[in-house]
Image (cartoon, rainbow, N blue to C red; front, top):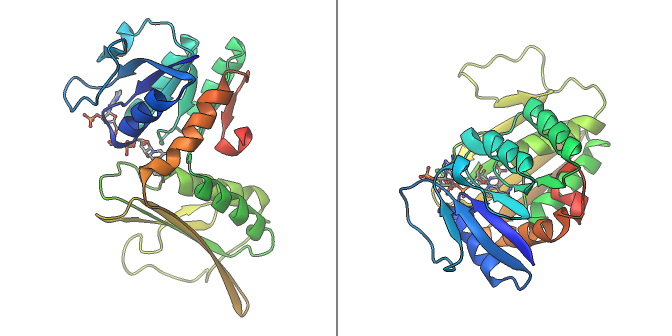
Length: 255
Ligand SMILES: NC(=O)C1=CN([C@@H]2O[C@H](COP(=O)(O)OP(=O)(O)OC[C@H]3O[C@@H](n4cnc5c(N)ncnc54)[C@H](OP(=O)(O)O)[C@@H]3O)[C@@H](O)[C@H]2O)C=CC1
Ligand SMILES: O=C(O)C1=N[C@H](C(=O)O)C[C@H](O)C1
């Protein structure tokens, strides 16, 4: 039985994770962590509820985190220090923070996963986009999310841009003399790749990667219509992560 703590249990993703862990025959929900205020989902009687990070002292194997960008670094460091294998869905970790957390996990020989996206459609989109960028280096990313999202660009869009930039030859894109007559209208710039973030009610999570070439184009798109779609990825991570001895980035490492 894998003992699981869920941080952010009252949130949109946290609630789904609480449900999934309770329904899974091999998982036990031993603890949840989140702010004092907020709706509490139905929890097993044996599940301990924590509102203060420093009070968490229970025996557990895995720490699942769907909180907020402002808390994810502290939470992940806490999990590793206490030898809970982190399964981190929360976005917003900087490259420097990831490097530091990887070193900490290595010292402890602890398995862990940071996954910008637990959905298979997004994992495939990132892989296809990386493949396409080898042959079509002119590319822009449009990510579209619900209007309550705290961070922009999305973790998935940043991860897509990083994967593309790993394989794309040094490349100048667009007209070097172009001028913006409205601030930021061309979007954010990651290594020459433009990223555009759309926030609208009614959306869940969606991404398009657009490639252009002489006389042809390619659009790769994924749509998350329901947050339930992330849960099979979270379950795979909980199942497999305690057999690992390093902090991995990307669900594809466990598939
Ligand atoms: N990797 C993936 O596949 C996915 C990742 N995400 C990411 O997961 C994160 C959560 O998303 P979502 O569930 O939609 O967001 P929500 O805002 O619905 O949930 C976040 C929850 O965390 C709580 N919280 C705030 N601060 C803390 C803290 N210090 N410690 C513990 N809990 C805290 C919030 O409480 P309060 O509201 O009171 O502040 C809220 O209940 C985001 O970063 C999002 O980008 C989302 C979907 C998929
Ligand atoms: O906030 C969200 O909703 C999502 N966040 C992740 C991200 O920033 O990429 C994953 C998915 O896009 C949903």
